[in-house]
Length: 356
Length: 175
Image 1 (spheres, helix red, strand yellow):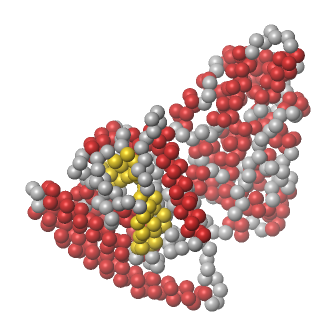
Image 2: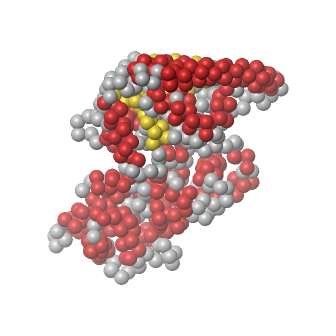
Image 3: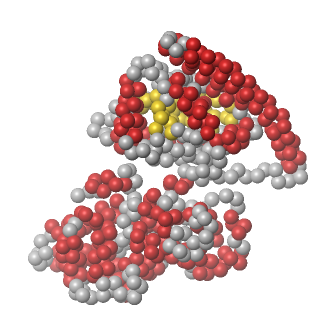
């Protein structure tokens, strides 16, 4: 009798269920009541039924609550930081800061990045072809090179990354999930451990990078628009997770970049693989720069430029305790549990950051 | 998004407050205005049906189609006047009026049993058959003293729902 039959279409969103549940309970009770009972109590009880049938206040307030403020839109809202340079004393300081950032730091960082790329590419491609037959050795060197390149990237935005928790180990039947704020999440994690990730193929120079360099790490591609793709990808994921030589697999279950204060519903794909799930929480310190990449508003290049003209990108990476699916839990419930856990961690990190 | 309250002058705020019978404070109206602008992505001055349906929690609500007919195309003034029924300051009468409007789709001041049946259908979906719904409704109507053919007015609604504990308060998040 309870709302189970309604869960299918909503896939985790429980809006409307409470209201419907009450309505159905009332109606079902009514149908089961023997209407020929003549006691006054039964009469009074039954008289109230019209009132219960007509009372749609709960469903309406859920709708009203969604219109006035909903948790989905909240995830993509970026609060503009309060301008602090508005008076005659602070403004010149701010102008000096801008000059330093754009005219001194930015060129240095660009040069650093360019050098890093040159070194990386000049080592990567020759090795890629020369060691074609020595797969094990080739993979190790390529992994090391990619880690080096990621460190260069991180240095190019003066990234100050603090890692907490036990470092990931290479094991089969485990998958890493992390919250997603920007494409740089991947770079920051990659700097420490050679992960393979599952990603959407992007256009432009990012796409080129994906196909050449990231291929060596064993990354998996998918195409959101292709329906058959899902099975093929699920199979590839399963194979990857069971392969002892493959790099640890990293998945961003939100599927999109979110503003680092809340989490969007986790897609269940990562939780259907029958493995241990190791959560990673990435929290950026907003004081230095807001690292949220709103892909509808900015291209990745503009986003990088913004990062490279800020003072620093400060973030904390927390490797959290591995979680396993509980007995009798469906993958959807498991993913919800992980989402709540992840959001709680981010909120707690947010709160401690604000208290500092 | 910037400081959108600068687009509303004090005069505007007072006018808006009057229009929604002072059921929202000025800060709440500012917050609702930000929300209105957030939903109205193309800055038309009203929110279209698909912009409402873009809010997942709204789209899965069983009464969303009925509410959509009431809400779409409204300018901000009408929007908050309609939503004021959800304010904690709104009286029970205001809330009952709103509920009545949801039932009375053609706006003629009368809610027939077929109107009530349609809302029941929206709420219960495939859980019940039409015959079951009809029989439940008929029995409920008769026991409340109405016939199957009677059309309920707002006064009738007030009588039936008068003692119900309507929990229809939605808080407006104010920064």
